[in-house]
Amino acid sequence: MEMKFWKDVFAKLKKEIDSFSGGVSKYELQKTNGAECAAVLLSDVKHADHYFYLNNSIPIKNLCELSEHLKEIDENTFRNHVNDERNDFSAWVSNIIGDKTLGKKLSELDDKEEISKAVDIRVDYIKRRANSKY
Figure 1 (tube, rainbow, N blue to C red):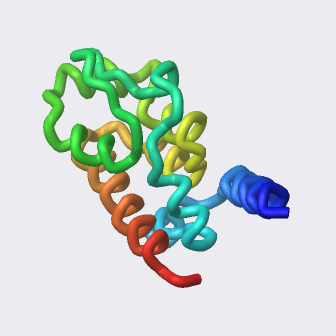
Figure 2 (figure 1 turned 90 degrees about the horizontal axis):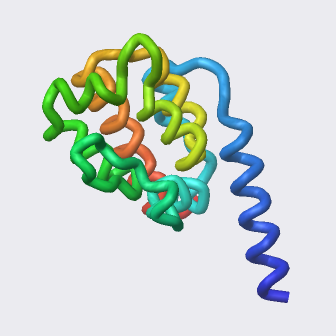
């Protein structure tokens, strides 16, 4: 019985995460469907193969670590991951973390400070949702 409950919870969370789409205003960056979903978005990536590795070999395992490292990386490291050909941060957040809303917003940005701010806004809001009772 308990296993079925958790399978249903995770199936619902996956469906909610997959359903994120649309606008990427500040309001949209703050949308998260409940505390359970928020906790999933903040958790570590399970396998090292899916960690985000900066070109200086530092592994990033979750959105909180991404937020911290974006403030510290130099412009060359940033440009290695965000340029005219690609935005690795957007791809990782969308495809590995599962946050399509933030991933879409990051895909529209190419400035280190703007990307850092977008991640900070999202992380702060998700932390509040994870600690809420609804």
